[in-house]
Amino acid sequence: MTIATALALSVLAYGVDVHRAWLGDAIGPHAGTVLTALNNQSLVAQLARLLGGDPVHSYRPSPLPVVLAATRWTVVAAVVLAWIAIRRGLPARAALDLDFALGIALMPFVSPIFWLHYFLLSLVALLVLSRHAARAGPGTWLLRGTLAAAYLLAAWYPPPDTTWYGRAPGFWTELLNGRFFYGSGFLAAACFIAARGRSGAA
Image (cartoon, rainbow, N blue to C red):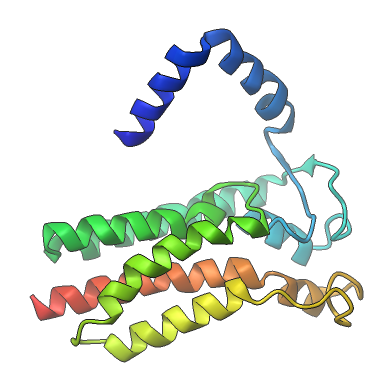
């Protein structure tokens, strides 16, 4: 509802033509592509790097392989279905909080582009989940540990002269370069742990 309202207000304020031009110039030409640049920490970008895509400093859009697109939507669908099942026993306020946090955590999974500075959005989800981690209950320490891992992976930015940072090619290098994406994965896992804890405590 919030997104729909914001979109409606934007159209009213700037007109349909501006939005049509934005879709045609900024979105249309890059639909079905992926950027393998290091600071793009989306699921499809990380998979493309692991599979030997363009160099980590390339900002040239490359065609998105069908298998990567299918993998993205399969993972997202599986997470959403699992979430629908686990959130049923949650109190209304807890469900709203955790829906919000999971929505942020899944952004790198859904969007083909998720820049490193979007980490600030994850901080909001971390704050929401921290409130749940402050409560005593089933899985509290597991939740706190998962949140700590999410923060360390997402917030740690290695110095440019680090040996493996965007330099030496290879599977293990690319695996390490996806730290922010992995942090988002831990953030999503924290939502499930918090939901299970709240359901168990209810």
